[in-house]
Image (cartoon, rainbow, N blue to C red; front, side):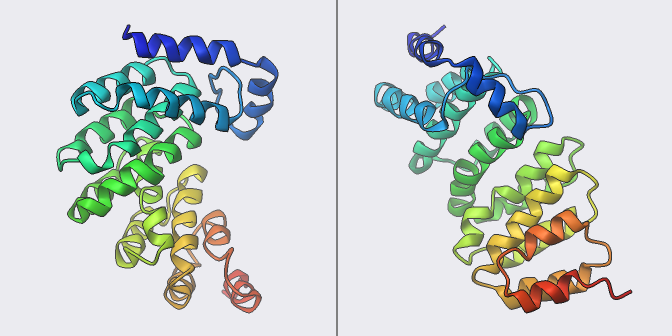
Length: 237
């Protein structure tokens, strides 16, 4: 075990609170393994040890991330999310293979999925926009977290008004997905896109509301004016 990983685990163990872990479980349908601490504490520890590893080669840092992920502990996954984001200015096109492997192998809940994808994968797509094609491929995965990742990786750019066409294309590919975590994921993406493109997202929802699961629809229209919300929720068929 790398000494930094060992130090992180010791510090997490020192902060562990079984009561926080038990309370946190209510936010997840699946069983979550955790030390039990506030997210801010885990992030603070991740930032502290980033100072020790940031001068290492990217490949070596990725290996540390894999070692952290392998424990299955949620707080250690949060360290990976922080470190992967810090590497953004060192990203290369082939790094999508690493991210895909991590999602397919280690991601087991919405928190670790969103933690990695909102920022690290989102930042990667901003640098290599042609790789949106890879996100579209993820929508066809049997892995629910890979399908959710396809949507939530564009949440931050969509919030700024970017990648509208791509967001709608990914929503199309996930439109009738039966998994609620995937429905919430692409509904969230549409919601963020609606901040700058209300009319376009409203038109999309109206065109698809007969087949769009209500969970996704409710997420998509959350930020819209009351009148548009009422129109979208109306079951007029």
